[in-house]
Length: 618
Image (cartoon, rainbow, N blue to C red):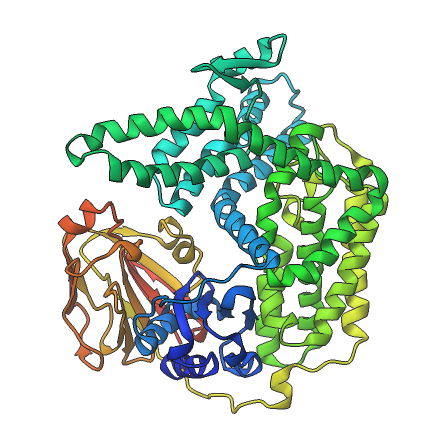
């Protein structure tokens, strides 16, 4: 049965206190993100019972996150239409609590580090390839292929400041290329040579100011702090420098001033801060080594529940451990327990539960956690729904982290050694078989403890108690034609992770040669996004289809897309439903890709691509 997004949006709006209680609405790939004036008006329990809602988080500062998974785009369109344009009105300034500031900082760090994760995962994969080549094919460390692959792996960590400079610039809304230039300035070979040559005092001079001789490869906090200051300075220079000379003068002035600031202030300060954090972790390693991993796990399962995404803020600490010790025995191990344990929990839930919906959630969640390192489907789809299973998972996780801490297990990479696909990272370049066997023991322990807690605890799936009548509707076969003229793009090559990974459903795209956008099916217009970048159509066969125009809708302005249809209009395959002004879109450097998405992919037996068409068989 198709989800009634309008009704779902209405139910959510009512239970967050209505439109008058909202100050901001937004969304990410899986969550509806809201900011409310009064959290007391938010009915968390009622929100959790809404069909399609996987979980709800109410945090300090009035932030409410409603987790819904891949239907977020469709839901957000309806919610935005109901809530209207919401902006923060005048509010009394209040001093933020320390806890709120801490949460804000962690979420800021998470937002900056999250886009860098694919590069870190690449380094992990290359490390595994290096091990396989050496162990399985007898290649020695002086073999050219090994040396070059090692260079590729180490490049991720060496140039990490450059990647972080880019993501920081995007976060702070300043010039990404200039931020990257600032990071490259710190990594330039002659600076490294100067540092290695040293001086009697450990300092040099720059414009008469003392500069600490220190290298910055792999550093993160320094560049984040610097780019934040750069964003403030950038805005100041825009106001000061006349427009007629701003284009060529502002970048030069900005970079020269920032080069002074980063070498004399933010560079040494950020390094000091990072070293203090590392020293705190090292204190645990030295004095209570067995308790370090269980301690961070307990924090994650308690206080950390109110700081979603905070784990990403600690990735730099893992990178620093790897740079200084050649392994990480803290962050990766916590991640390891945080993915394998939920993975096995979901697996045993799927085996024990007789409810079809439960199994449909649990089996994919198990695969996602065990082999993809993504535990959110288990957390929001299972643990939040059945509190007893949350505690089963927490107890098992604590036992596993205690084992990892007592046995002193190490992950020989800065990131990525936290799911079964990357288990070889526990072996390391020196082939530490003892450590590898201990890691396998942790996997076995995770499987055993979750089996005992899940199988021998009495729990019921919520739908077992109050199930709805299952729809007997048989879906008809449907074929989706191209939404535009141009070059065909397969799902995996779409330059957007939400689309390329099929989070919203099976999809395909076109790089348009013209501005006209066509309906892929015969049907009725179900919704039109306020930004006009997305149109949903309910086909005559029952297919829920979204036509998504451009990959950066936040940059679109009025006039960029002219929608030719209204909600309720009947359309035919190939009929023009919108026209994009490609000149305006390209002028804003917006990717003009047009995408067709089968939102209810799960309702079909087989979905495939045939002769440039997406074909769904009922």
